Length: 542
Image 1 (tube, helix red, strand yellow):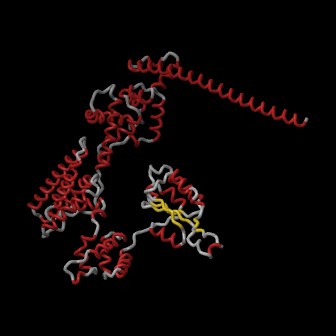
Image 2 (cartoon, one colour; image 1 turned 60 degrees about the vertical axis):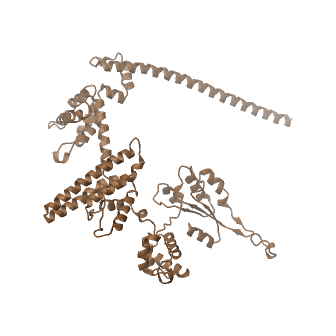
Image 3 (cartoon, helix red, strand yellow; image 1 turned 90 degrees about the vertical axis):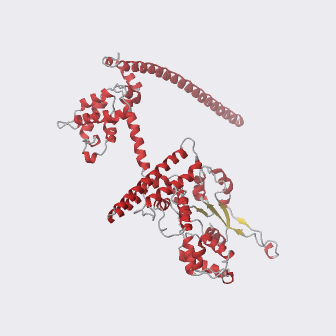
């Protein structure tokens, strides 16, 4: 934003800026910038002098700066589309600035803009500029101290300037004359006084590493350093407290495994036992964390337990790393519980579908259906469809109709309940050859399936209409009583549908009559007007 303003001032343009604090909806943009995009600015600064009376008022060109365009959200309704239309028609340059270039909102806007990407300057560039600024302010700043300060500030120029300001205001006490000069040694001693909190620049993965590795690098340290490390790890939990518990749960056993492998290589039985005890304590702490977080996110939502959750997460890393701290091999893994929980919910939903389809034939709860029925039924379907002489399609469909299963249950849902198909070498129904699948599909679609669950899912109206059109419903001779009840309901619904269709036809005819009447009256009026005009012209000629 500063660069755009400086360029506009250098080129002699008047700056009109709209940022996130302004309303930038379609209506607001059209009202604020509707006339601006095609006009210029008149300046009357030197119009009072005698020389300027004969001259015209100088004209100043404009530039529009749209800052933080990636923040145009739901409150700025249709603002992005209106901005694109203004860019197409504007005679005034429009500079759009965003923070997140990869945002979904920017994909359309970048097609109408010249893309200029800014990067953070390197620490060498910032250090040279900081040394020059310090010299102008009467400070002697060493180049290596300036580089260390820029690196500690994350290459943020504003934070470097703020640190220089704090350093110059708060002179070192006890030095020679209280000088405000900055040396590398003085910077290391007073770095904590002028820097931002380091945890603000820590990612979720780095925060997880610092927690699960425990008190690493604190052997022989004093109590102050140990307390500072504890507070840092506690603050690291709040980098993303929604995900940090799952991240710690995913990675803490890797640290424990490293401790145990190190003791096993030494051949020390006591060290191996200590490592196993550390695993036990870390697991107990993780269990306590789970109980605490459940009360935090449960029905009561007791958010006052959040600091306790952070301490319990740090306790997990303390036991996993041991007294001297551990080491996490490689990069921290993302929480795998999310994917596992999604698969679990999917299989629970599929099992409920199985239970609903088979409820008319089988009386069992979900666990009993999963353990006692599905394996045996899968084996029977496998013997029928993977037969050496060819797939026995008719027998398989009869078995499906007997238990109320549909095609998706056999070819898709059965394969979801295999434990490990690679080791067991079980054939999957999805791997059936295309010829057998096509024959099965043709045979399945050519037959009527009267299962109660399938009738409700696939629609009872269609079956009722076919039987009513067939005259007499002769296919119902061998059906069950439940199916007869469904056919009666379907016939009643068909009669209701026919009445509704008759009402709709009557309404359509009424609307058509009204429309024709309007057209006829309009045509009559038009003819009357035309006749009056011609008569008037004839009268004038006569």
